[in-house]
Image (cartoon, rainbow, N blue to C red):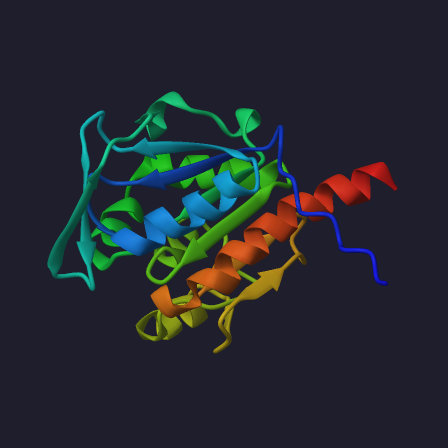
Length: 197
């Protein structure tokens, strides 16, 4: 009889999700958060303002309102193990030009921590200088933006690139949320295993 593999536990791990207050794709916000919490991680949701986040479904229909825990101006990379950037065209278009958000994701990269983005979220990576010389994916319409920023765009449901001193995880769209979420959970679990070895 084969022994069952122990469930992944992210107890003690802290993950930051950053978003604006309008236009975030509902499921790209909710599903990774749920997967991480189920694995035992503590997830902090940081928005631009200390007001409800008004999500959208498919960039057009009103979604749920979600309360943030804090603002991303009040947090720092040293308190977290990973950062997640959800998509939603409006959300990502505003995040990409926000210098506080740019600095925050760059700080995670400099510290060698996991940076994850889905759908239009990689726009923030591009404007933060994190796409250059990296392999990543995104919503297909960002392909030219990624290429122009010096990145290598690939069409896969999840792409993990560790070539730049930190782990970069990207996915294309809401239908990729399961492998995207699993990759983030595995990334944080793998770092524990590597540290214990």
